[in-house]
Image 1: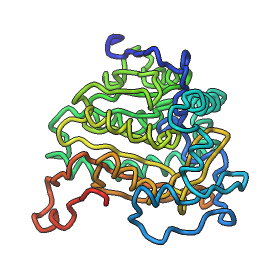
Image 2: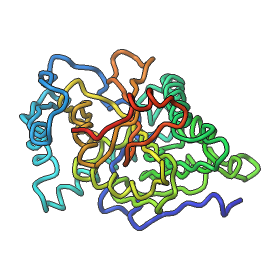
Image 3: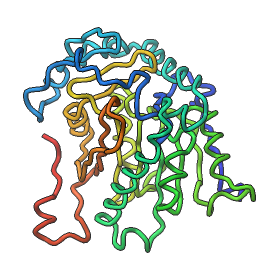
Length: 337
């Protein structure tokens, strides 16, 4: 009943934030798949990286651009300009404050959180469902049907992904969202007219920014992170995953779904976010000590939008439960090097 549908508002809640949450295009996790400027502008994109497995020092030297066409020689140059040097607390807080402010001005609807692209909702959910089913089948005996699985929806926004996807596969789903107005809309949409949460599945609603959240130890089988991690600076990205690893149950995993730049990165000054390349992400996964278990490109989105990719990430190299020994050996993930 009401006890099962609780909103946990911590001091760092968006409404009283000093550091505004990495306002993510929260929707699937509250944020849209696309940035405010979703068009692929090949004219101002940096040259492709010469190799896929760039080390940290090389990644930091990879060039990028913003949506005004301004170029950066490296990610390090961009981050120094945007959040200051180490110890510049004020400038970092301002980055997150402005990002949160952008999303607080967006309407709490599917069209709002998806940046005017509500029509891609079905394709997004369809792609996510196929990926999730594959992961459940390979990571949990019986596809998880014989156990009570628990998920965390990061950047949940108005609950779009929870309601259309996660609630159908998990016994409990917690929602994490820094925009209080979005979170309230999610709570309302997940509670039927009877006043009871949908099969008591939507359990906790956390109004906390991603970079400040620490999950309960060993609570989640899957932590779903969609269209929100791009609001985190690299060091906060790593810190989040290092904390969140403790929130996974043994055998649990992360699912990260995000926009992908052709190479380097693309900075959005308006909503304070950064679209990273696949190579950039892989270097950050390495820093987090995460393994790529599976990855898949999202299909069926409008051509003018950024490419979108899904990654299944694990703290340890997992064993698939239904594959043959030979196949499992061939597909066994390894730490990114």
